[in-house]
Image (cartoon, rainbow, N blue to C red; front, side):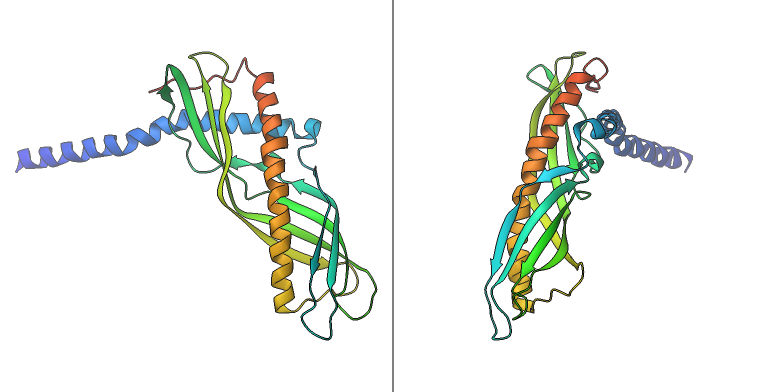
Length: 231
């Protein structure tokens, strides 16, 4: 009986070591990524990362009932906000060897990104007046894959940076004074067009502005950004 208890105890200990092993090797990667993201956040004001200009665009929604006209909306004064709050999504991968280089891969969570617009709209009623509203387009689901690579004890460089599908957005309309009501069909068409346009805005902000600043920060702090050794 004593021998059996010892055997069971040994099995439990081995299982615990095996299960904890991979998790323990992710911590250095997590620490590196969190430190890099803090550096980016600290540089946000200098690079105007918290309010990135978004391109203007117009959309048009056809009339679908005799009580409404063609709905036209002009999106202006747009900003992409929240890029300074991009965070690590779950654990990074442990560092690994790739053709003599140390490689670290991590997924970044884009769900704190929101795009804001001031919108001039008309055609929601038979009255030809222009009304104003604010439109908020939030990233509900969005992930970027970041891979960095370096020779041992050398400054890392960006190997891969892409937005992984799906990129899911939600739309919220807030009227400033007069209500801007659209029936169900027109509201769905409005949201579809807005999401199509703003997806391009988000992709451009992440793959152009954010990536550029990420590269600059890695260069600026190359003396302290050293990839963890491969375990």
